[in-house]
Image 1 (tube, rainbow, N blue to C red):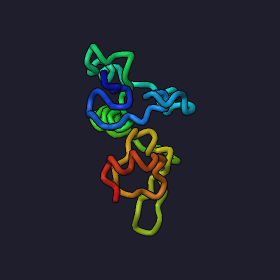
Image 2 (cartoon, one colour; image 1 turned 90 degrees about the horizontal axis):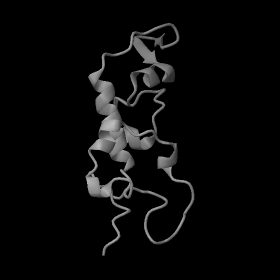
Image 3 (cartoon, helix red, strand yellow; image 1 turned 180 degrees about the vertical axis):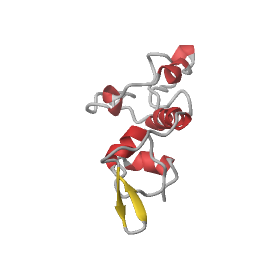
Length: 121
């Protein structure tokens, strides 16, 4: 029987789980610090639940879709500043919005994978 623990059950790509496969424990995994959206967990096929990890890309895509479905947060003091003709949003505002827009924002607090998935070059 083939070991599929290193493959995401939703997209079929590597899940980058540190605990998957036969190589043994390779250190703490990104997923131990993650809170998975309930609807994402519910979309995992029954036979794969609690045995195979979802990849981080699927988690990010789900979170991004959830955040984009909500109205943008109201801006408050500290969410932006004016620089010449530009409004520059702070990391605080980006976190309140909940996702990377892919525009290459100066204060984007999201990591490279999230920026890549948002379409940032």
